Amino acid sequence: MEIIINGEKRGADNVIEVINPFTQRVIDTVPNASEEDLRDAVDSAHRAFMKWKVESADTRAAFLMNWFQVIQIHKEELAELMTMEQGKPLKEALGEITYANSYISWFAEEAKRIYGQTIPASSPGKRIFVQKQPVGVVAAITPWNFPAAMITRKVAPAIAAGCSVVIKPAEETPLTALRLVELAHEAGAPAGLINIVTGDAERIGDTLLGDERVRKLSFTGSTEVGKLLMKKSADTMKRISLELGGQAPFIVLSDADLDKAVAGAIASKFRNAGQTCICSNRFYVHHSIAESFTSKLKEAVAELRVGDGLDQETDIGPLIDEGAYDKVKRHIDNAVENGASLVVGGVVDDTSQGYFVEPTILSGAEDDMLCMTEETFGPVLPIATFEDEEEAIARANDTPFGLSAYLFTQDISKAVRLSEQLEYGIIGLNDGAPSAAQAPFGGMKESGMGREGGPQGIEEYLETKYLSLGL
Ligand SMILES: NC(=O)c1ccc[n+]([C@@H]2O[C@H](COP(=O)([O-])OP(=O)(O)OC[C@H]3O[C@@H](n4cnc5c(N)ncnc54)[C@H](O)[C@@H]3O)[C@@H](O)[C@H]2O)c1
Ligand SMILES: O=C[C@H](O)CS(=O)(=O)O
Image 1 (cartoon, rainbow, N blue to C red):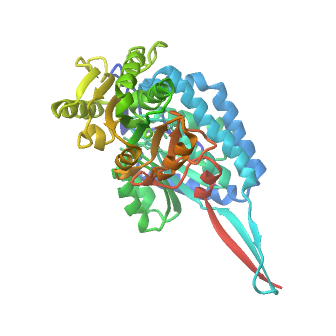
Image 2 (image 1 turned 120 degrees about the vertical axis):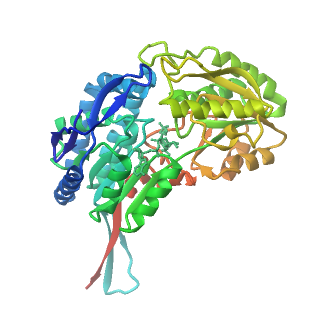
Image 3 (image 1 turned 60 degrees about the vertical axis):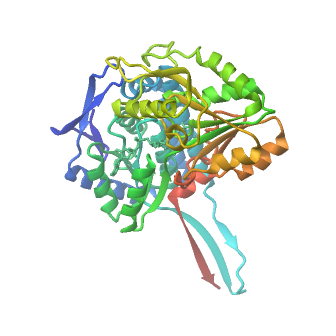
């Protein structure tokens, strides 16, 4: 596939290969964008921004809804492309296309609700008017695990706000993103409004972040890279949004509805083979119900099918690559070597047909194990027990991360009180799948800054100014 700059496709002799995580075969190649490509992309985005920023909210909304409709028409094609390059089961890929599209429809509506303010001046001879204006050219750098949703969760609010965009998708999964941008042009995107480049991440990042015309970085990815890009944004004082790593605790209190808690555990742990930023990473279960919870969980896990994402029966596809597989194996081995019990699962030793890990339950986990301190990013579910709620909250908060946490209890007062003590941007309260375009998704501490989605999501792409009028 080809990159898109100023509304036109561009190929290249220098390309990078896209690998199918199941077959381990090359499925396509994409350009390794040249410095000229990158310069042209920012030039085009800047020209387009000067026109788009004065377009009406109705015009911005109308384009977004056209894009929404075109994606709807192509959602099966997009889902299959996603499964081919990322490995997730087709039914999950279809779900992601719908989820990704919901950000477009949500921000098509939000485009019309960018309100200002008048503020009573202390001086009777003055009037104060507050305005919101688009921030400018946006660099959007996205991860491989959600090849569609992480694109639209940035591009939709940026376009709604009046900005233009240069996208750099993950080198592992560029095809879905490229196709989404092709469809945006079928939907009538003005030339230069949405540009997409692929290739060497560090070089592209340095060029985009070094250009003072790029006024905003919206990054989703690892905390390590997020910190690096935050530093690189300082030289030109870019606005930044960072959606980074997670390490979610999943707390089951003694009064929890165990069937709901097990369903929530499956939903929050095994989606995308455990490769989501809000996947529950460590489980704290009250000692009095640990045995019954684990037994119910084992039964539910036995229903999950591991296999080729294109197979309708598959629930868990391959991990993205060998590095991911090695990390998950390291976490399982470290836990067992330090006293945890392998209740069910483990890695699939034959990696000739992809890097697979069975849905895995570990009991007797301790807080100093790798699976309890690092983001595993795989289908591994370590269970530790606790004696009282204060202990559970303290252990849940004892991490540099602050993206999502889960709490299962039937006591509403306790649910609200303990949720307020959890240091996380997203709380799944008796809910293992909290994500929605209407909600402000994002984290605290080393899980990032800024929010994507909800009424808050468009603020990331707006500047606030005020006019002081002397009468
Ligand atoms: N908080 C969220 O909303 C969210 C969502 C999805 C994924 N994530 C996190 O992302 C991570 C997995 O994604 P990943 O492996 O793609 O992350 P990553 O940080 O390795 O890469 C993310 C993006 O950054 C680019 N990149 C890497 N190094 C770069 C550099 N030096 N300069 C410029 N760009 C660079 C990559 O090419 C990719 O496009 C996990 O930690 C996961 O928790 C967070
Ligand atoms: O991996 C991170 C994604 O943001 C998860 S979700 O699809 O938004 O829930």
